[in-house]
Length: 202
Image (cartoon, rainbow, N blue to C red; front, side, top):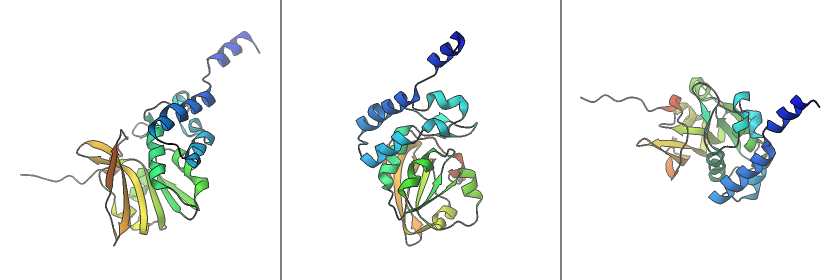
């Protein structure tokens, strides 16, 4: 190896060390201690699901832009989302995310995973019924198409924008409707596609 190549290699981030640090200093200290969940975060390489320009920062404790208009949440947000979802082997899952990372985390834990971006989810008129919807971002409202895609009794875990503050939220489809119940306040990228309809006031 030439001196120049050695210099470049020495400057490259050791992402395996960063991944372990993320687990120990972001997840564990925040109460994420489920073995199954920590195992998934240890095995899935977050950097493989990011644009090349963002890979060196894959394990920072904040949201990472993946396009001009979209970002994926910090690892802790995604860990909290999965902890609340408690995915089961029998679950059929729809993941709405601008990245494939969340789907990769949950895929071995469930029966099947379907993925879609927010725009794709809004545009689709019909979907296969699923038992669990994971939204990798914060929404103001859940579109009817997504409610229809959820089986009766199915669960949804997402971020929720409530009075301009984002929170983790969970819901269950009962009698054809879904109401998201806010839980912990935490910073989550807002999905503009799921904004509530504007109301007029006079």
